[in-house]
Amino acid sequence: MSLDEFSLRVLNQYQHGMPLCARPYQAMAETLGCSEERLLDCLRALRQQGVLNRAGPVFEHRRAGASTLAALAVGDDQLDSVAAAISRYPEVNHNYVRDHHYNLWFVLTAPNRARIDSILAEITADTGQEPLDLPMRRAYRIDLGFSLGPPA
Image (cartoon, rainbow, N blue to C red):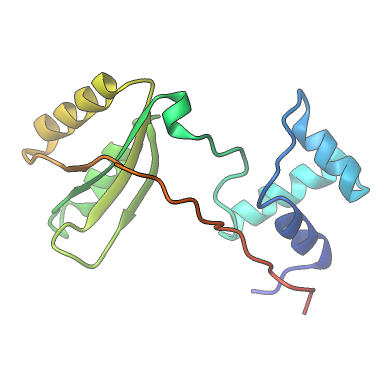
């Protein structure tokens, strides 16, 4: 898939440092020299194309509450339905399949550990299996951003 110059500028500039203000998309648009409407149209198009799945801040979970990485071993015949059920929780911010015995992995972030435990108990009751619960012990910061380069 080929991205136009404007889309590349948006993606390169805003992998980090989304403005923290009342109108972040307006501030982004001003920096990019376009209208807020054009920026939002671009972000919608990137999402529809599958290039982008969200635009927003990432918070340090320990300052905002609690978080854990969890996994289930789900049969192929149930994978889509179990993944959909887990994704219904607003506390789930990642949910993906891996090639492993534990094949459905998800990240939960909640106001406190008690809420995470409650969600994991609900998932156990709904699926009949207890999720593997891997709370973070220590964070190592990495930069997940990367330059997409100039337009092709």
